[in-house]
Image (cartoon, rainbow, N blue to C red; front, top):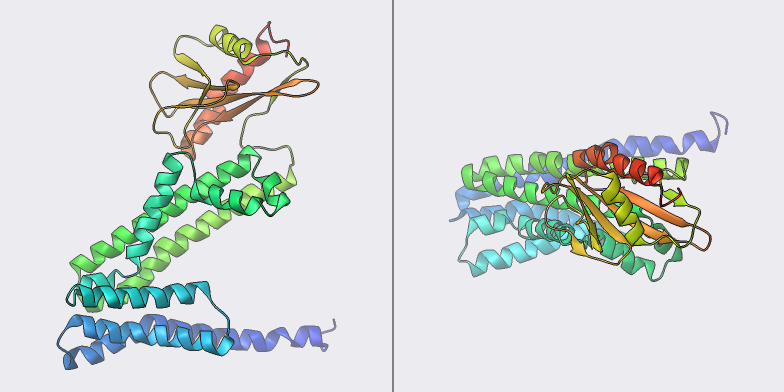
Length: 333
């Protein structure tokens, strides 16, 4: 469109309205609770009553927006639910102000622990959610079958758990060590840094992984697959080749699968799964999977780890395994 056309004119009102709308949200959610608390506190007998008055300002605004738009907003609904539950808990505990201060962290902290535990036991919550969605969406089912997608789900679950737990611990420490006025003034900025910053970094990482996967289709977080032009290769032969090619510092464990995180012991799996580790260190591991095709046998090598240990294992043990398999005379790769 030309500068004088409608395509150029439409965005301008939105830019003019965006600033005031953001300012209103900041005032209501950050400044109003502190101001309401300071004004109400001298006229009531407890901190809880003043806290409820301060928290009611953004809650009333959120409820009004929900009613006006006639559309349920997940974040707004969560805030209202936390307010209601916190109020009930405060009444049930005889006016305990700490309970009301931590009304949101009562949920976020345990949710973070649940994420971390799910990753530790090898069943990341985000991956389980994707698997449920895959029952009705064939495209999702196809994507989560790839190891890189499953790794992204596991890393996302772990990082989300860390963010939520760290945030809950920091806010709880703040509530226990500073005055209520300081707590109200500092809680939102601290939450923005911990939750907002962590979420932004996680989203950036996920987008980078997805962009890399879509730009270079064959690029994976795993090592390149070793292809053997035979269909009779067995996992026993692969295990024997690894034992012969690797030195005594490496352990070859057939029928085992390594955990998602670099903690814990390998878990029992199918006969075509092999874990290769170096000594007793859970940090140095790789997963070897024998995949039987109609006209060949593929051996997939997946380095263990989720962050720095993933890079270390990619450049270290996984690469060494690949060289051993390529040089094994009995496999004919």
